[in-house]
Every structure is written in structure tokens, then in C-alpha cells.
Length: 519
Image (cartoon, rainbow, N blue to C red; front, side):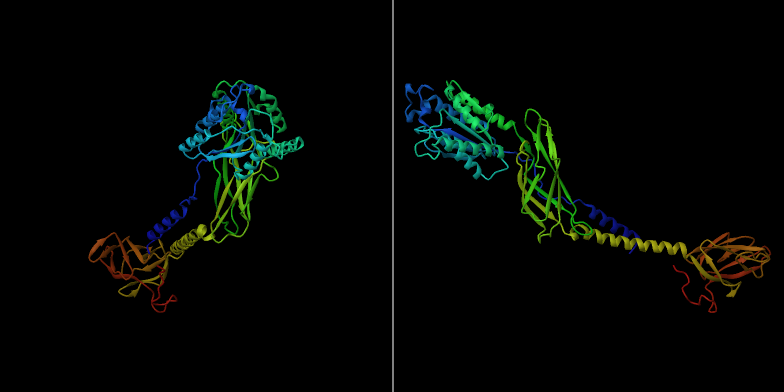
């Protein structure tokens, strides 16, 4: 194969080996959605003709949405479902009175689902006799625990117009039991970072609403009072205020699916991988993300996989992205299919703000050694072999350019055999025998001609005091090969005929008939 062919093959292989490998499954931005749990009072007092004046009577059940409180609550929830919920949010409406129960539960995926929610809300009856607030809070907490969506925020909103008045058969009728319920809920709200809001319909509910807020460990800002209910818009405004806060007061991350490819190390094991999680804050001021210093990131389902994250504390400015750096390492046994699939969850310090989603799936692709290095190794071996071949060839050209020859005229030696290196000269002469020279028998000139060895069995003769004749033509310079004849003629007309350069005869120490020219 010619040298140029070797070069083309090497270039093609090196280019192919350098092509980037793109990990499949690139994940784009994922919006952090929320779970909204609305707890609505269904007691008959919501049908009061004049809010706060039960002595003025109640609207009949069939005309319930003519009452200010019932209409205000229904219209406000309808407005929130149509205008405030984002695609992907989940809405659960739980009603309470004599007993708490889920009225509807719907994740918003399509526009028509908002209309479905609105139609269902018009079916609210508001005809219970009692108001069991403790039961509603316990049932809502159990509902949140059953959702199994820890990566989403939990936003609970209670709308009521009365005080806690459980029915006789309620397990929460005793004041001590109610206190225990509030204490347990207060701990869960703080531990799980639920966002809980209370909306009181009527100024007469203020004292009761603020007391519930205190029992649950909520600030006064989480208790909203609609003092004078003249139209449904007043209730919708309070609900809108809560929804807007919920949608603005959050920190979102760009994705909830982490997928990485780890390369095998050359001498065993796997190299570390890295990924970046971008966070964006929608709070009005600076907010601080604080991860648990003992276990900032928990991974399950991936034996031998370790994830480290830094920084553990990150301060975010409004609408300014911040980054969490993930470092992934693997020290276990590679699965047969080369894939690890599991679940990750960020752990937070109690005083820090959470971001959403903070849990999700993780997939690690462990490539085998030959996938990454096999082709490169093959290319390297071929390249080295070709390189060694070229180097050896160059060495032979540089270090072994010599030949053993004898000069004859009519097959009669003009001198002894000589060893010539490339570019070395000898002379054909009479009376001048310094250095390499042979006798110019019969010629009267001191130096007849100079002969230079060009390499590869090629020579060049240059006339001095004699003329060079080649096939009857007089020449100043002649290039010729082994066993090629030419003549020399001096000024007196004397000739030395049939001069040629041949290999030594059989008695030469290099051996007759051997290949002395390495090329």
C-alpha cells in the first residue's frame, strides 16, 4: 500500500473517533406545578339572606346561589379554576359541614376541564347543619399525604363563615381532642412546608379565623377576612390574592428528570459525571435555599451511585437564575444492560426555602470500556504501526545509504573495490590519487572526471580534463546506473572505453551476487 493511502486511512479513523457522542433523552424546562386543596364550608349558614344576620332567614336550597356567601364562594372558586390555575396544577375541592368529603378532584390538562369544574361547583348544596372544622383539616391532611407528589407544593385554602361546631358523633367534639389535632397539624405544616390560608366570610368570623391561624402556627397574613359581602367579587379578590401569591412566591427548577452518561476510566471503574440544576426565584426579594448539610440529596434504587451537590446554601435574587452543581460517581457493579434507574430527592434545612420540583427520576447510563476506548485503541495501534514503519524507512535511508562497487573499463578493473555513501565522490585520474580514486589508464590528463554516488544505485559523472562520450555524444555531465557504459577522451584524442560501475567480483568480502544496496 502506498504511503498516501496510509495517511488517508489514519485521518478518516481519527476523525471518526473524535465525533461527539450525544446522550439521548435531553430534557427541556419543566414547569413546577402545585397541588391546591380548597376546603369549603357547606353549612346552611352559607345561605343566609343577609350575611351575619341569621334572624333574617335563609335562601332555600334550590335558590342557594342567590345567597351572598354561597354565591361568593362558588363564583370565587369558579374564577380560580378558569383563570388562576396553570396547566398541570391539580385542584381538589373538599366540602365540610356535618362531615368532610372530597367533592371534586381534577388535574388541569386541557381547557375543557376548567369548564367541567365550573359546572360541578354549581352543584354545591350548602345544606349541612353543623361545621366540623377539625374534621375537615384532618381529612385534608390525609388527602395531601395520599397524593404522593412530594415534588409539588401543597397549598391549602379553607373558606368558612362560622365557628367550629362539630356534630355530636364527631370524634373531634372534645376540646382536648381539637387541641391535639391542631398541634399535630401545626407540626406537619412546618415540617412539610405546606402553604395554608384561611378565608373568613363576614367580619363576625375574624376572631375565630385568627384563633385557628394561631393554633396552626400561621401568621396573620395567612388569615383573610371578607368583612362585608355585598357581591361575589369580594370573595374572588381574596382568593385571587392567595393564588397570585402562590404562583409568584416560589422557586422553580428547570427539570425533574436527571439523565447522565458515565465514561469508564481507562484503568477500571468509572469517571465522575456532572450536571447543573438551574433555579429561578419568583419571590419579590432575595430568598435562600438551604440544603440539609448531613444529607442534601437522597438517591434510592441505584446501588453504588453517589450524588454530591454544591453549594449547600444558595441565595437567589428575583428572576435571576442560580445553579446547583451535581457530581455523580459510581463504584458498584455495572448492570448487564448498563443502566441504573432510581429516584432522587433534595433534603432541606428547616429554615430554608424549598424549590419545586425537588424530587424526580434519575437514570445513569454506564458505557462499557470497548464502546468508548475500543475503536480508539484500534486506531491508535494502526497509527503506531504505520508510524513505526515510516520511521524505520527513514532510518534506513539516513543511516544505510552505502554501496560496494568496482569501476571497470572493458571489464578490466581500474582500481580496488570501494564502499560509497550517498553524495560521496571519487575521481578517475592519472597522477592524482588523493582520497577515493581509480586509474585512468591510457589518458594523459591529471583528473579525467569526477563521479558522485547519488544513492539507490545511481551515479553522476562530471567531466574535468577529459570529455564524456555517451553513445557518440559529447557531454559535460552524465547520470547513469550500474553496468551502464560511457567513454572518456582526453585532449590528445586518447580514449578510455566502456567505463562502468559494477558490483565486486566473487573474491570481495561482501560476496558476489549479494544485494548490498538496501534499497
